[in-house]
Length: 342
Image 1: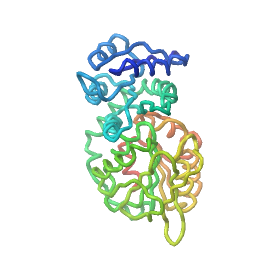
Image 2 (image 1 turned 180 degrees about the vertical axis):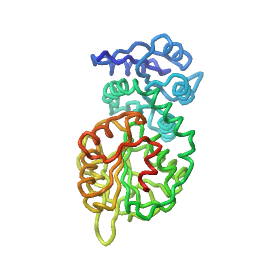
Image 3 (image 1 turned 135 degrees about the vertical axis):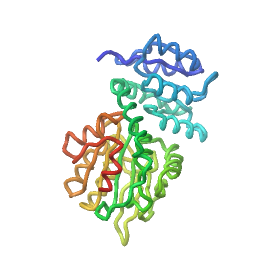
Image 4 (image 1 turned 90 degrees about the horizontal axis):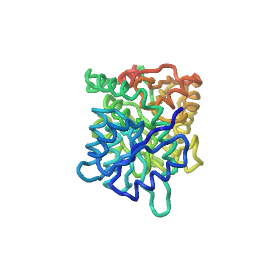
C-alpha cells in the first residue's frame, strides 16, 4: 500500500515540527504539507489531496471545529484532532468526535509522548478513507429518514440487559443509537474507547439526548432499569459483580486487546451473569476488542449484533466479530436500536 499522505494543520510551528518528527520515521507515512490556519489548509487540501489531516482545535482565522464541519460537509477526509486535554479542550474535542473526526489525541505534556500512537492512527485512517464519502452520505440519509427521532417502546420479549462496545467513530454512533432508547430501557452498559478526561462529559451529552438516564459508571453501583452506564476511561475495566444484587465493578486489571476498559472484559462478565437474557452489540471501531467477548455471549444464548461495513467509520471490531462467528446479525447503524428491542 502506498504511504498515507498527511497534511499537518496547527498554528504552532513547534507543534507542526513535533508531529512531523513523530511521522517521518515511518515508511508508511508521508507528510505532504503543513498549514498554520484553516484558510491555508483549505488551499493545500485542494492542491495536495491528502489521505489524512491532523487538525488543531484553536487556531487563528477559523476555529478548528468550524473547519472540521466544512471538511465533513464539502470534502470528507479522515481528520485526527490534536488538542490539549484541558477541561474546556476536552469538551471541544468531544464535539469534534461528534461531528465526525476520525479520532483525537492529546498534545504531549512534560512527561508524556501521546504522539507514539499517531502513526498507527494515520494508517488506519487512510484505510478508512475509501469508504468515508459513502458512509457519511449513508449517515445523512439515515438521519433524514426520521428513524433516529422516534423513541422506541420497550418490548416484553426484549433483553434484561444490554452491553455495547465501540471505539473509533463510536461517539457519533452511540448518540444516534441511544437517542432511540426508551426511557424504561433495560440496564445498559457501554465501553467506548475514550481518554479518561472525555467520558464524564460524553455521558452528560448522551444524557441530554437519551430518554433514559445516562451516567459515568461508579464502582459498586447497582444496575437499574432505565439507566445507561458508560465505563470511565483510562485505568479500570468495567464488569458485573454478583452478590445479593448485580452491581458494577471497576477493576484495575491489565489491559485487554490493548484497552482498559475493554469491551471483551465487559462482554465476558455479561456472558457469565446473564447468558440468554442479554443482548450484545459491537459498533464501529479499530482493532478487535469485544469480538471474543461477544462470541462468549452468543455461545451462552445471548442475541449478538454488529454494525455493518457501510455505516461504520472503521470496520475493525465489527468485522472481527463477524469473521469469528460472534455476531448473529450485521446491521446499518439506523437499524441497531430497533433490532435490540425486537
